[in-house]
Length: 216
Ligand code: DX5
Ligand code: ZN
Image 1 (cartoon, rainbow, N blue to C red):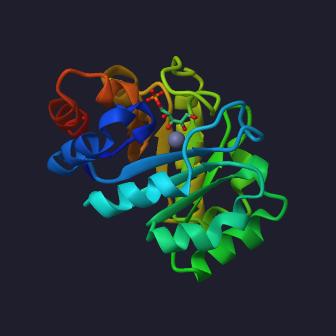
Image 2 (image 1 turned 120 degrees about the vertical axis):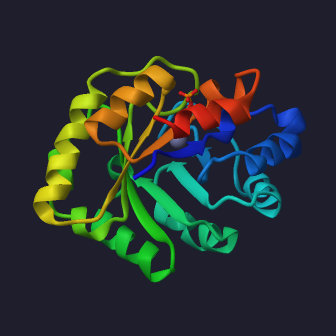
């Protein structure tokens, strides 16, 4: 399968957000990745539904919503109204992860579970058949532009093994510090989807950068 790319809007120029989204529309990007932060689950704030609704109106790409918030299930109706394709909830933020994943699926959204760098892949054993995607964080969530945590590559290999052994069709997405070098490493380890903020939006030619990511 070809590398899938989800540019993270967090690194976009918010003063020219519509132009940034149009650029992604013209690119080979597969999805658009939206990072929501609440200042509680992570020590930062980003944007919320008004901004995502504006993006949803302009983008031609499916929305990959990454909720870095406590009690993410509270926002399910709003995420559904957005028309999101994926709703990523953090395992560390869900008291009843299985119930939350079921509710997401019942709402007609593809459920995805996200793991922080310190959370082991083994904790997914009981839910791997209930999720369409696992998002492995390769930085501590909350900020763009951080360096890639090398150990993530080993986690991708472990996760690939778990998925193969359980006969699941779960996609593996990785997020944080991804450039062409770390991206190539992750692809070799078995990642399907790469999220990238700074490497794409801070590049002089984001469309070309996405094209180069697609070739990994
Ligand atoms: C971090 C976010 C990431 C971030 C990635 O909390 O989840 O999606 O935007 O940005 P880069 O690619 O700059 O590490
Ligand atoms: Zn993210």
